[in-house]
Length: 273
Image 1 (cartoon, rainbow, N blue to C red):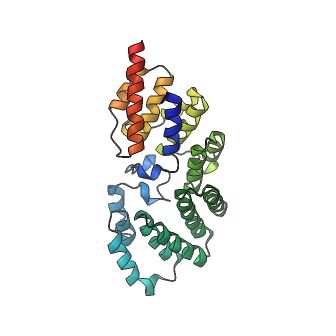
Image 2: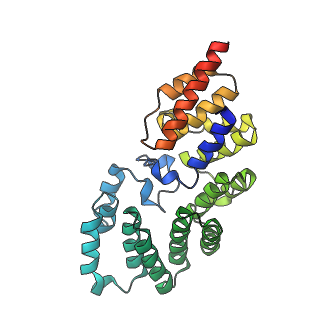
Image 3: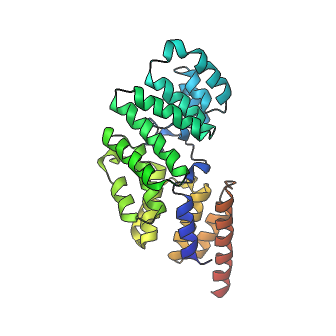
């Protein structure tokens, strides 16, 4: 597999299947999606939030069963709130119980009057659709979510990942360039820009966005693999080898295979020089 084919496989992996990669960030400075998604919260941030809503936090700490039991007890007092149904849906989402999660997101959508609540439900329904390769349905729900809450970042970010997966790099860049992201310092937004420009062949812009990611995050395997490919394309074979060697294994089978192929390419290229 040559470097171009590896990059194509890598972009497919880090698009809509990226939920299998650990993207938890404890430093809120580098997470512009923090207020809209707990999935990216590390343990320290979750603990700080626990006093505000213990049940919500428990879902993201691996205590989904206990949390769902608590929500059943709270039905009489909280059942009238559309957030109640959203939180139950989120617990099932974390468990990857997609059918149940979809049911409760639709309950939230039906009960909600606030556009922001409808937007959250639609975003999450869009993600479930994408997990089942229902690309058009997922795109439509993400776009509806964006229309209801234009300032929300998460639906836009998710739509950009869909565009990346299908090679629509200019569309991904356009979505990520929206005013909603103005002034951001988000690791994954910068990483998405870098991916788009790298595959477009704009190495200068790709390098600029890689440069905006804190160096300590280059050990994350998806970032390491993509940056190593950037280094190969710019002729920095020694740097690419160091990047791949320093990566933290993600336990994502496809990503591990890609990293191993990159190592083989590097060894071959270095022998040829």
